[in-house]
Length: 156
Ligand code: FES
Image (cartoon, rainbow, N blue to C red; front, side, top):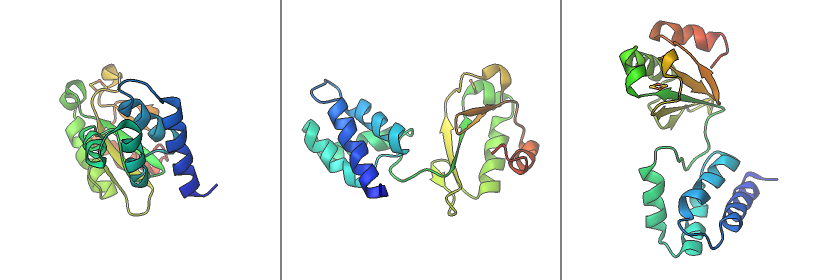
């Protein structure tokens, strides 16, 4: 199935699964992103029409929640906890080291399509701060000085 067909199918499935439900926009967006990793720009108008919303209204919700992206993610999605327990244990330095190493900021994907860097607010691993999640695999007690090592080890 082509990428275009996949995106159309993901939008169709999300609209079907949430047809007639109150407050369906967020569940639809989650459904699509869970299926293909992002909410395609060319599906936004169709989503809006099905809910009686304008394209701008749907876009507004997508851009409000950093969780949603409108382009395909990198092969490895690195979620960096930005909440207090992780920040107090050096999370800011880890985030800066990752940005420098990967050459991208939060909510960006590297030009080679390998990495996306996401800021999240508590991964539920506060006792192991600073915590990261790479493609849903948690990494504990990551220090700025370990970022090169962790990448070299293939953990990221
Ligand atoms: S504060 Fe970072 S995992 Fe909870």
